[in-house]
Length: 549
Ligand code: HAS
Ligand code: CU
Image (cartoon, rainbow, N blue to C red):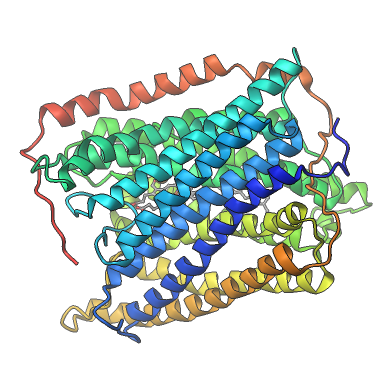
C-alpha cells in the first residue's frame, strides 16, 4: 500500500500540470465562444467584422469537446498512474512530453484554421463541408499525440505488472489503462476517415468523397469519445469521492467490471447517431440500438455503487431512515459538492440519452436543440463539474499548495451557479427541441413563420443561462489560477479510497486483456462488417466539397 502523504514527484507533477493549463486555456476561449453563440442565437447580437456564427460554433465545440476534455483527461490520468503505480520512469515521462507537445502543436494548428475562418465545419467536421487541409492535419496531430501518451500509459502499467507478479494492478491505474485502450481502438476510425478520405479530398488529390463511409467512421469514434470523457469522471466517483467523504469503495471488482463493459460496448453502437440516415438497413440499426441499451448497464451499476457508498457511509455515522444518510454527506466540501451536483444532473441526462437511443423517439428529437440540451447535461455538467471538483484537489496537489476556505466557498458557489445556468440553458434547449427548433443554426425567424416565433422565448432563456454559465467559467478560472499560482504553499492529498472488502482474486481475473480486446474486436466486427461492405458496394458517386460559411 502506498504511503498516503507520499509527495508527488515534481517532474510528474509538471507533466500533469502542463496538460491542465492547456485544458483551462481551452475552457476560457471556448467558453467565450459559447457566450457569444447564445447571444447571437437569441437575436441579441450581431458578430462584428463578418465573423460567422459557424466559426464561433466550431471554436466552441472543438475547444471544449475535443481539447479541454482530452488534455484534462490525459493530465489527470498521468497524475493518477503516478500516484497509484509509482513515479513514471524517465523514458515514459519523455514520451509523455512528446505526446503532450504533439497534441499541443496540433491543437494550435487546428485553432488557427478555425479562427481565421478557414474551417467552419463544426466539431464533427461532416463531409461534404470542406475545411482547409491544415485543420485536418492539426486534428491528426492531436490524435497521434494522444496515442503516444496512451502507449506511455501502457508501458508504465506493464512495468508495474512486471514488478508485482501475480498481483492485481491498483484500481485507478487499471481504469486509466482501460480508458486508453478504449481510446486507441476507437480513434482508429477517425484517423481512417481523416487520413484516407478528408485529407486527400481537401488537398485536391481526389474530387469526391463517400459521405456515408466518412460519417460512419466518425461515429465509430464519436460515441466511444463520449465515454472517454465519462470514464475519468467515473474514476473520480468510484475511487476519490469515497475517500473525500471518509468512506470506502463499495466494490472494487464491480468498478472494474463496469469499466470492462464500457470497453466492450462503447464502440459497436455508433449507428444510434445515424438512425435517420439512409443507406443503413433497419436491421443493423436495430442491432446497434440493442447494444446501446446494453451500454446503459454499466452506468446503472455506477449509480447503484454510488448510492451504496453514500448510504454505507451515512449509516456508519448513525444515519437512520430511508434517506437519513443524505444529511451526513460533507456538503460544505467543494471536492464532494461539485461532482455530486454532476451526479444528480446525470439522472435526467441519462434518461434523455435513452430517449435518443429509442429509434422512434429519435425521429422527433434528431437534429433539434434537444440533442444540444442532452449533451450540455452529460458532458458540460456531469463530466465537467466532476473535472472541476477533481481539479480542486488535483491542481494544489501538483502545484504544492493548499485550497483556502475562501476558495472552497467560491467553488461551492461556482457549482451552484453552474447548476442554475445549466438548468435554464439546457432546460430550454430540450423544450425548444420538442417544438422542432433545429440545432446548429444561427438566428432566423424563417420569414416570421409561427413555428419559428415559438422558439424565440426559449432562445432568450438560453442566452440568460449561457450568461450565468459564463460567470461560472470566470469563477472556476479564478479558483484554478489561485490554486496553481497563489494559494498558500503546502501539501494536498490525491484522494484514493480503500475497498470495503479486498477482492484480489476477482480483480486479477478481470485483467485478462487478450480476452477483453478479443471480445471488443469481435463485437465491432459483428456490428459493422456487413453494413460497411454495403456502404462501399452500393456507394453513390460521392460528393464534391462545399464551403457554406
Ligand atoms: Fe449521448 C447524442 C444516447 C450518454 C454525449 N450524446 C450525444 C451527443 C453528445 C453526447 C456530445 O442514442 C451529440 C453528438 C452530436 O454532436 O451529434 N447518450 C446516449 C445514451 C447514453 C448517453 C443511451 N451522451 C452520453 C454521455 C455523454 C453523451 C455520458 C457525454 C459525456 N446520445 C445518445 C444518442 C444520441 C446522443 C442516441 C444521438 C441523438 C441524435 O439524434 O443525434 C447513456 O450512456 C446514458 C446512461 C446514463 C444513465 C444515468 C445513470 C445515473 C448516474 C448518476 C447517479 C446519481 C447519484 C447521485 C448516485 C442511465 C450514474 C444521486 C443522489 C441523489 C440524492 C439524487
Ligand atoms: Cu452516442
